[in-house]
Image (cartoon, rainbow, N blue to C red; front, side, top):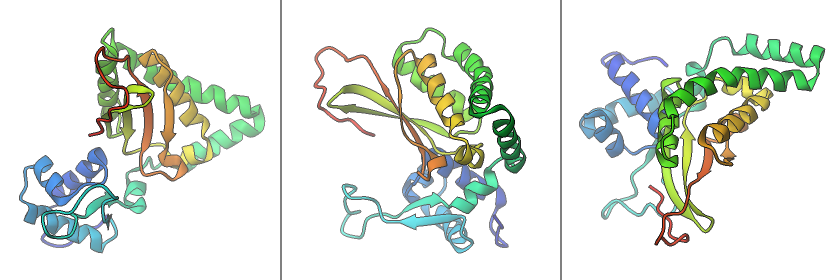
Length: 232
């Protein structure tokens, strides 16, 4: 990701980080998050659009128009931008796992994936402690963000009851996980154990989705309507 002359590199890195954490965002949302004027944010986004670091698209249906004008555009990091943030040892890791699978069988890759996630699970478990389920989900997202996954929480209600979605906007092992989904499976299993409930992986960056999304059901609150939806 090259920076044009006159574009402050540190501010641009902050824009990249904000897009990682927030996912597709409007100029206004980025401006508020970074404490910059919309004009300053647009200047960086224009430069990033020019070199392919970000992509722009119209919001999906339901966002509504911005005043009398057109809907505000959403900006998101491109695949090439995500690639530059990925672990530079992806090829070596993939070759090692491929060799492990060829010499030890498919079960060896599964065992490796579970062993890899066990250290993370132990660290996260200490952070989550004995908090109530919603607080545990939030703590898990914060722990993931500290490890480079740029995670956030989206509360929602569905016909099945209340819950949250853990959204991971970046995957440090994306290109390895594309070849070895056992890494994603082991991570999902660990989330379930950490949160003490059955979780469901809805989407993964490794499978071509824009974000890794995991649904976490929560205990129903007395007096609430399970069909009421509260996405934010």
